[in-house]
Image (cartoon, rainbow over the protein chains, first blue to last red):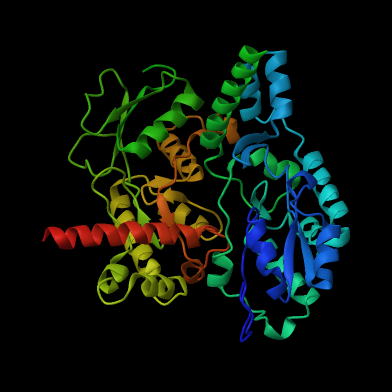
Length: 236
Length: 239
């Protein structure tokens, strides 16, 4: 993100290179970390605070489950379904074919609102020591896309998070508040493998359109889900 | 004639989609799709053809959908013979500037891709066909600024296909009540995989679109440019 006339240099260490991080962390004026799930953290917040004091600032891990009926997201290289629980249950109760038919006709929903509310609750609860963003998402998710995959927030959310981070670090003087289309465009994270349906738009009261190719996408996802269910039966 | 006429749809991929609407709404025997070079219409009662076959016999003609300009650049086809719509301004500059400089210049709105001009030219071509065909340009004009009307220059969005089917049905005096059965699923089935295309926010503004036409324009433009530059240099080498 752009800081104007700043003299600041940004370095990104990613998740895994602890040695190089430790080696150079003392050079940084600020350290921004992401509040990942505890089992993914290499360092506890307490340790980071103890080691680096107030120059350590944390941003929340944005994880939004429920903005689509059904999607797949890769977690640590493992493809994981979201919204599949109701589908699996329905398929077991009748047949996979029947479940699919009902899903496509909007007769089988996957509790999008409840999943989204829970995601927002968890996010808000995780924000005690971080920059806050759950309020912005809760206020705006019906107005424009706030994410394009479970863990891929949309550019306006990232931009808002940046604005808040800049305020927290008192870097306002260096920040160009008029983000242009180029700067916003480069914040885009990839679109997820998702079935974002017209029923989702209705259920969640969204003011922006569903994916035109939702049927094609949902068919692909259903194929993968069926394979996974068959594998589970074989493994059992 | 049967209770509901059997209609032969003879033409391009869009007409195939339209025939699917008829099969779903008026029964599976109501429509047969034949490719443009396909067999004769056999026992069909009526023939609907894609417009370019104006020499052929038909009861109705459907215009050939080809709307350029609703993407900054687009790679419409697949396979070996790749073409890039709207990319001429880039091709003109590709030899004079380093790639990265050109990409950034374009991404910052410094290249005019003439979307509006291309769009208007497409409309003029469409309207010219409509003299002898079922019109659709009025619907497209009314809708294009508020919602996507296509997923590629030759790929109309489901709402457009449904509207064209509705108009054909009206011309053939078929009961319009059948269209009450159009649901999300039928519309969803009519969607085709989008072409590789990107729509820059600068062009969104110039065209007066009120929806976010392409949140992923930034990475898509970069990828399309890479392919464009690669093809351009291959051609240069070959000559």
